Image 1 (cartoon, rainbow, N blue to C red):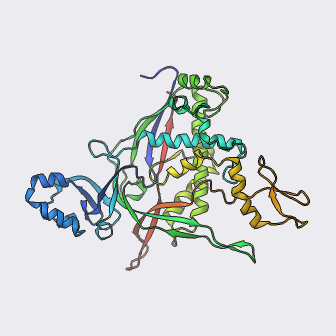
Image 2 (image 1 turned 180 degrees about the vertical axis):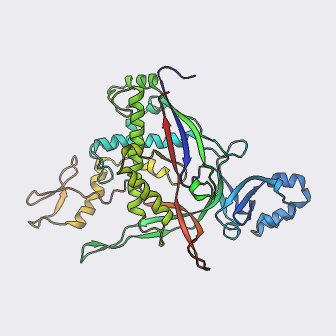
Image 3 (image 1 turned 120 degrees about the vertical axis):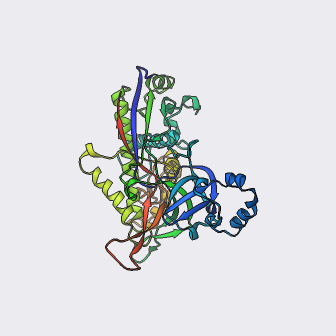
Length: 437
């Protein structure tokens, strides 16, 4: 039953890139039976209950890092749930696999807490973006007090959890409309490394990437990656208790916080939520595209097309903009970065070395130093010339990137070398929003 002073926004969610939301549990790759492009998670306890004499065989298989297909009596009836295989049995055997969250029927779902976490970060980003007039990704936040982080946007001065404005928001777990498709995938993790500066030319060379050992996980797959017309679609709703929001704001010494907009009406709150989501996703996608142009060392058609298409939408008809959430693996870094904005003093110190490396003296030859503790500028001790730090060394978004890789055939080629690795960005879900209702 919907209350009069409650905003309800129905969400229909479509998986647009591989999504992994884990439970913290892992299985060994041997616990999956892989047959070409298909796989099954085997219910080993039930198998042993029915075949107690096979315990030594199971131990031998696990110890020798063989495939569970090596057990002769493991029939289809022992499969807990089916998956696609974006890996082969040789690459995954013996490796830990991060398990996707599922309900009691082994059906994957999207926790409301994951969606709410992205919304919280987007709302914070919107406020910061307003304060800095769109320059959030280009310079540090100038008006955040020392030792204060963005948590103050949502809570009272005491930091009490009961004062958190997001108490007024409820997002229920999103359950699938039809059977979603899981896949065993390999996660490729790389960290962006800025190129060393050439002191003679003062030009920055090509960036490089540092790779890590691959990891494995169960992922929800996007429709675009499957040979099927079935949409990986989920439904849920956002509820905003406006009465509670008003009470939370009213208890503050300065109740003019505009996290949910200047007017607390259903229409305006919904508009603020949509605006926050669109601003944040645009910032993230722009940053992704600027970082990923050289990652890894091959043509990343899938990843490049995914972001390119969405950037084009942002500069075209505003009414046709996507509304996106990014959840699961590879997304917590954004929340951490936005929610823990660097204090002003730290930002100054962080950028002094970078600024001095580009201009270590002014026209008069004097040395640059911090003007004072309350500003974000440097000044010359001799002539007083002021230089603003570049803020190039402040990583508003971290430089570690993860993608799912898949070896795909090129239909235009008919040779043994007609396959190449394609990389998919992680965690993007498109939302269709309706409301107020």
